[in-house]
Length: 478
Image (cartoon, rainbow, N blue to C red; front, side, top):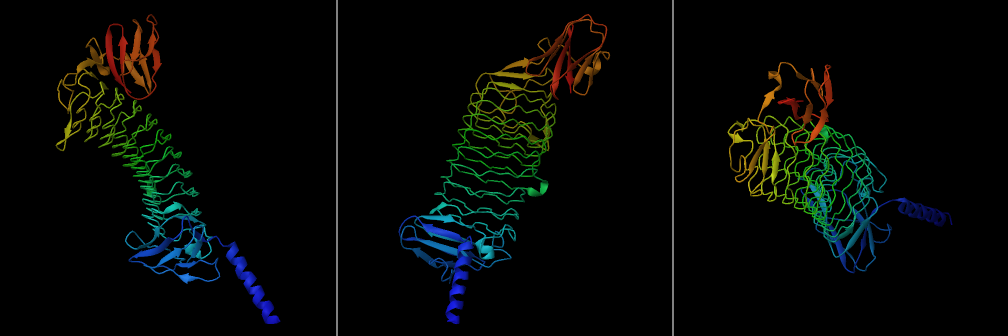
């Protein structure tokens, strides 16, 4: 009697443990669905049960498990406290046939029950479901403490995956989501990405995360004010259904941070504001390349550039008719290279530089206006040499100088009548009317003459302004 009672209690405990566990679970969406695991120079402990946890079997690489009927389930676990996969050249990945929905916690492959919220090692779930075109639902990813590349490529080309799992981690690390949903062509909605305050060490964290997600219609909010190198690079590359970009409030940038972020997003109609005034190398390179529905470019407030910062930025944007004002007065290496190439309807460009610069045998404006509109207006300072071609001013375009009277003087040559204090232009002895214009010809402010006291005109931001005092025009750079 005692033995029977003890056996009953143990069975009840076992049943209770099984019930309480949050195992990774595969459910068949059709008869005869199969799953297995494959190794790439690495092995880990993987067990499965098809009877609710009464019996467990080792899942060996190359072995396929059949779920005979629609609705049949298999639960999975493993004791891999030091990690499931090891690196990008040593990992395990599932293979599937038919139709399978995953549920439960992927962490049951780590702790055996799916309770842990800490990923133990770098590359832990690298490529875990890559090429699983039969996967229709993703499992839970509850971890709040991530590691480098832990989810990189996890659902690569899972073309039947419609919904992404929640990603609750508020602190991220390098490459953690890199290419995570790359090629998930059925994915319609992206998960929230609550992390803020990216640092330099978080590089490539979102790189190519949703590349070629051609059904994705809405992007998640990206609230971080500081960026890391490569952090958003190609994040939405080829998302052809994406119509609206998220706000990008960051003002602290790192190299490649927005490189190719929305390239080939052919449904994107409006670009987000780009408030940063201190740039990094290749930060905006190819950002909107071939966004064929984009009709208005964002304002580019930076007047000091770095190498390759705008290279290819709007290449192939056939909907653009007017370029943003380019207020930089000097050109670093390749900064405007192919920036507006193949913008076939572009007919207005406004620049502030006064010479065509070369550095290290590289042309800073290589093909920047190749294949634009056959006629247009090129607005520039009078001092810029009149040179034509794809690398210069387009053939057939009309030149308009920033000062129509061709009498612009440098601020140092007007007997100290005009000076600057921060973003304020100051004018002494206001005998004539004073007008301040931005580079686009827009009147910033007009003050009537007659005052004997200096006047102060606050300008909206850094850049080059034309100050007309009486019959003289003065070029002022803030």
